[in-house]
Length: 258
Image (spheres, rainbow, N blue to C red):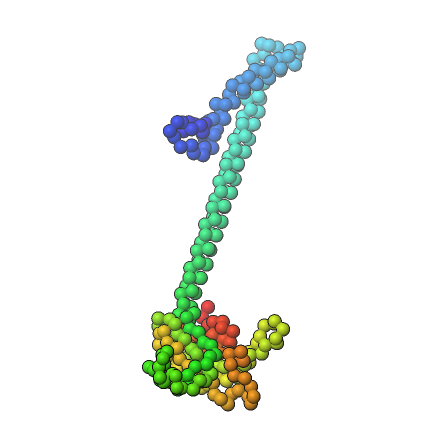
């Protein structure tokens, strides 16, 4: 690249530095400056032709020196302005780059935190519970479609807890809630009706366990179906984190982790 910042064929154009800019400025303005000096000298000669002697060398030296000092001061001011502009542009570009890098870092950290939380909740998200009817009193090894034990067993209502994850869950405890539905389209609420003291110590991967709702829980004449009751469940995942899926199905961390 040439000193005045013009690109040479085959060379990548880069930003000029202050020194290169000064060199280019000097090359551009020396001819106009010389012409201006001549014009100023002629003007001074015309103005002071009666009061100065053309042969007075000190007077000419003083005039030329004053003019050169003025030009030097003007040029110095121009250079200072250009240096300030270049530095301001650099500072602004650096500030924009810092802001961009900081924003990318924040986004990356947020994505990593979200991924860590998703990984932490991955097993718990595969554990569900609902109020359902099923054949009661059937051994687990005989609970399959077409089983004679299933065909002859009485139907009952209770909690179905499914562990659809690839790891076991522990200390599983269910709760039964009575639904309060205003019937006008507003959100329904649920009142805790019964939490049995018993727990499932372990529910194996890809297994469903049932817990019967005691017949004494529904009030006399009260319906007992999945329109009236919902289920909540508490359990501990394979990482030791305690979770609760509430009456509305929301998964809540019970361990106090953030």
